[in-house]
Image 1: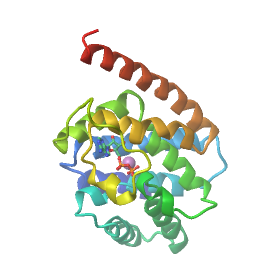
Image 2: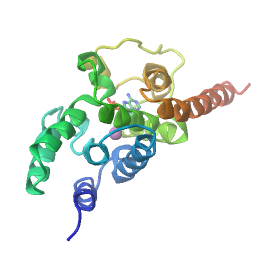
Image 3: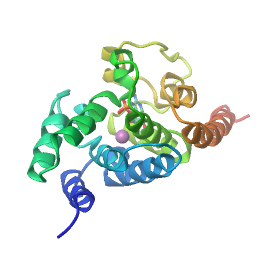
Image 4: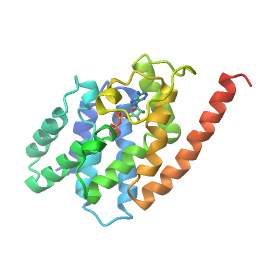
Length: 214
Ligand code: ADP
Ligand code: NI
């Protein structure tokens, strides 16, 4: 008989068929691997970390008419079907509900370590070379401009403004990606993020050089 993690992998792969490239199975696989790497350095419940990493984008509200409860319903349904204990289900759903950058202002205090780990992993996949690729892919998906020197980044956007995601892709670096390094929760997450952050700064330098043909 297959174990719960293997069944979850199969379930998520199936659910995410046809997903936008930045939020597809390979994003989940990277976040899962990063979560395990960070978890090795922390005292935590590995099963909760792995399940939350695998299920965290199962029904992203951006792609489901803003429905913020669907991911919770789908995950609960799956886990109950797998006869997972109610204690584990609650821990996993709490993470899925509170992991997002855009929900940061509403998140409870004293977050569990398992959430901190998966959140770091998800944020790390948003930066560096992969982060840059995902961001341009998402901008293209939304038909946004890559860059417009006339449009300033909007800092401190409300959740509603952020969700509209109608700015330029370069501005998304200032509105989110470059802020993530200082939001890391764990020492391991901080170390990985620092390297990827520097790479984004180099990318932006080169981008402006080429844009200005200087
Ligand atoms: P979270 O789930 O952490 O709240 P989002 O789902 O908003 O974050 O963003 C996840 C990834 O989607 C970002 O890291 C980025 O790659 C891409 N993305 C989100 N909003 C935008 C945007 N306005 N422009 C370009 N990429 C975006
Ligand atoms: Ni994610």
